[in-house]
Amino acid sequence: MNQSITLHSDVAQILLTEDEIATKVRELGARISSDYRDRPLTLVSVLKGSLPFMADLMRAIDIPVRIDLMEVSSYGGSSTESSGLVRILKDLSASIVGEDVLIVEDIIDTGLTLNYLIRYLRGKAPASLRICTLLDKPARRLVEIKLDYTGFTIPDQFVVGYGLDYGELYRNLRYVGVLRPEVYSGAPEG
Ligand code: IMP
Image 1 (tube, rainbow, N blue to C red):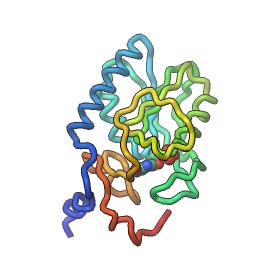
Image 2 (tube, rainbow, N blue to C red):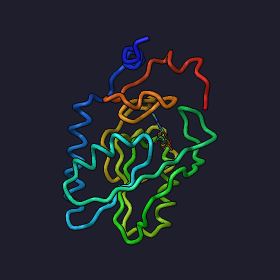
Image 3 (cartoon, rainbow, N blue to C red):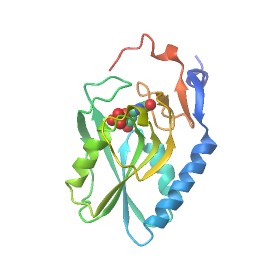
């Protein structure tokens, strides 16, 4: 079986092209560079979905930045629904006490994961804590969260690509797309 044909043909619709994403990431990088011009910034990215966004965003920022990575998993939900119960699989490597911190997220859906993360990171006493997300899906929000930098606001559709997965696949797509409904039907949850 040809893997690349299966990969792309599972996508019903391309929501954001590679070019649209690249343009937006450059804009966000320029805004962040200007906002933090005289302040040392730490970018905290949340694996695994934010990996491509973080890699591109940090190179679109032209002030000195430190980076750190966390990995969280929500449990008790399904492969398309977050539960709000969050487990930290990988914590920060360095202290953020007194640092200006920007969380770099792939997508905010219900907001439950980010809400947990914000409370967790605030407990580590950063000087400031702001949020940058590539995608915002406000239709399903369960907790109110102030987003400081948003790439795209998208409709209530489950999307894959540019880091986002379904069942750990499709992260390597260079665009963001909507999967064909057949891909979900009959798929085991979890
Ligand atoms: P939340 O806690 O509901 O805001 O969900 C946050 C996490 O759920 C994201 O970091 C993603 O890992 C995952 N997620 C939410 N919506 C989507 C989607 O449309 N596609 C892929 N993953 C998603």
